[in-house]
Image 1: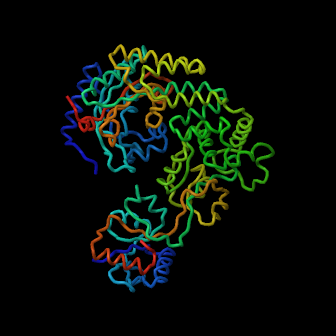
Image 2: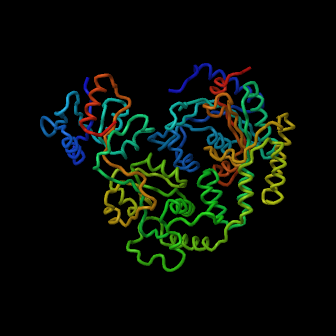
Length: 232
Length: 364
């Protein structure tokens, strides 16, 4: 049986993943036409390439339909409850860096920390009659983080894109999103709360704990890990 | 998946418990499984989303699978109830168990709730004594607490109304409460950025427009409040020590009554709450509860989902520390105030999980 390796099916994340494996002597490539999501692996036997949307890779790993997968560490934590029970990090790949941060208007000169955000949320609710809205698509990560830090009286509103614009559009009072340079935040008159990001994400090679790991597959994995020189 | 008993056995046990509660004069009520999410979110905050199943309905909007009975039973009572009233119910509740797959996401609860303003101490004792009788054959450990004492102690602290309210708001989040208490007592420094707001023009150098619903005036108001707060003297050392003593009490009910009377000498603000505690203890004894051996824990009830604000209790299978509490309950006057929009009714009640009762063994 072969090991199934799930890799993002398009964009920079796919290209960087291909580069990362190529630097380690394993060639991943798309086959067929540009539009066909089929792939090939050379340089090692017994590994099959599966091209998937990066957002679906956590789920495929959790169910064990793929043995290995490359995706952002933020997506695994967001999409999988108790992610450490379902997958294991084999290698942080050193690209796709992005920080998940909470940002508020720069005009909130009274707000620096989560402590301030909590106090503002209480006052905002009293004043406006509803809970302070934080726009995000990272519901689980943000909710856990705010609970661990004792922030109350907020609500998460779903935002799947253009999240930085929600404050100006008055559909949210604060946002939580990934940022690599902070440029978009600055352009939208927002600032990041102090105390470090909620999560520092990067492209990561994960191993599924649920996938069938029979003798042949374990041997292939051992060979792959040796080739990639990533330890186990 | 969690171990499960045959559903029929659990249902039969639930029916038995329901009949016992009916025998104590409770009327059986039914509540919908689908609850409007907004009410629960407003009460419990965003955290409830991590614990309740959220679904959507084209007509009612966001809905939650009933995470507990208390809210719908209070609503039903407020809408039509005659007073005093006693209710019982049995049915499934649904809780996501993201952090512990061993725990059941769907389970039965059988409850008993008393809405009666005549004698709260007697109502507290009634609920506890009935639970205690039902659970006696199972050899469970009972623990009790009293959030009314903590609330009174915080309200009596020598400090500003704003600080007292900040502490009260986080009473159910012990870690955050501790952080604030340490800061207000002068034991921990101000958070980052705070001292820069102490004087001068905090808007100097601001290079961004005002955006969003939170207006400039709200920012200015908070800065004024923070300045006032920075000039506020710390909560006296002695008061913090007394509050800590109160929160760390672990004694039997009989002994704790003595401790509380001693504490109340130095902390007069808890006097009325101690009187209520003593009245309840007397009422429990009059009901035949063994108060000599009943545990009291000063911080009991501070980490539950529910909005208890007075007497609280739980029953645990001592031999099965892996199980959640078999029964829990308490007084929730404030909840009825919030749901009643201006109306309120003192209320106390609790639930038993029949499946856990069977699992605990030792039944009659």
